[in-house]
Length: 640
Image 1 (cartoon, rainbow, N blue to C red):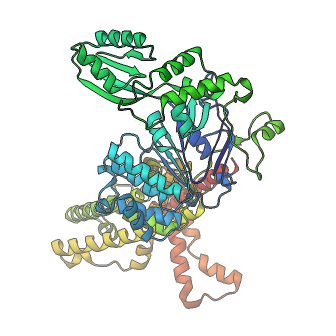
Image 2: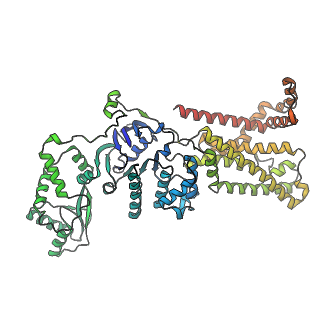
Image 3: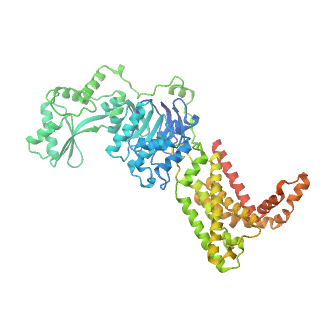
């Protein structure tokens, strides 16, 4: 069950709020539809319920607000707009990635693919899916964690009639199993056909909260749609015959040559046109929309005098039209109008003068009690999405699910090999720079730039294609997710650094012989420096993209280390750091009176010399600054 009380959005400048004091209930085992025209506030209501937008109000999902639920995706399945996945990711890969985020077994992805009928398209890219297939994938994402409640914003928008029937069958099956379904639509006929309860909104306010049968009786009205080149003549003829027979027939002239005839049948209109020789292009039974004002009138129990006349006149001509072919899909209009007349004649005692409000749960305060305690409902705060339950598995599937990482790695290897060949041809290049393909004129080698780009993409793609934040606010920046991204980025950087050295050595050996591919004498320290540089660049990209929420900012931070930070470090410290680090291990042993085991002095000295270099100092300083900024933004969002 969903209980929404006093949902109100924050006004912008001098404009009124888009949603003002909306309260309703969506019960379990029923399909509830929010109905309203474009701009009525349907999507805003859903965003307030899901705490995706600031405002005021209370929303309980089975007695608990959403931020009090440990795993929201297992309680509420959400579909707002299109599926926000990377367009290059496959359907199955996207669902398997979300399985790791929600903590469900990976086989669940294949199960929901079979449920929504996407088994044959599981290897298709998200960017190539049609509108109907995208809706199916969105429903599969909502059903992935087997939630009790489904909240879907315009799920049938843009679908064909066949896909519409399939979608509503799925929603009905979920409700029949005891689940709660809340959707939105702008089509009143669709709402009456598919819903058990219809909540009507108009200009951000609640107009009515009705059962589907009451909604169809008060708002929808059977009519005959007619198209004829002589529409004006036919309208005058039908009006004259209805007046002569004392029948309640209303003829409305639509745009062009179209007529809408209320209170008659296809047989009667066709016979009248045949008797007078009027050509007809279309003659069909339809269900007309009387507008939200009709629902409001029915909700407050106000029926005009015209309803008395039409009800009595329709009752008089019922016998003459007994054999006519009528559409009873939304009830008999004569019975509906007769019931409306009876309600008016019984007096105002039995008339409900206010739109119905949801019945409060025994364990929760009623709306009136809440208003008595406070003039305004409590504020709604936007919270970030929860971190993936299996962050390392999620990050591995995110990185390996698209070809960007593989193409970047291949481009780095090709550019590095070409650069190494050019440096060997020019000559006068140290062996270490030759194997790393690092010209002295460039701030960073291609491998470090590639690792920084891959690290920036780790967080940049989360903000550009927010698969985790599709239903729960902003992209999560928790420590568990950061740790997983740093681990995967470090592994990718180490692999890229190793492959770069290996490929460059092989190319140089094939083209120039063993002399250009020989290993330097101090290979251990150089290898540690090389791996540290590449991993540091990758981590700088991850942290910068997480802080500034952009891949471009992450790559700019990587380039900023040698261009801006290294000169500052050199100007501040000069070369004193290298000289003071020379005897650090010996001095530590003298102070601590501890003998380093297994030759630890050598490794410690190498590590200190590595960090004491200007690039090492710059990377360490940049990583420390970015990490502190990341922690600060994370703590600030939690405090808010």
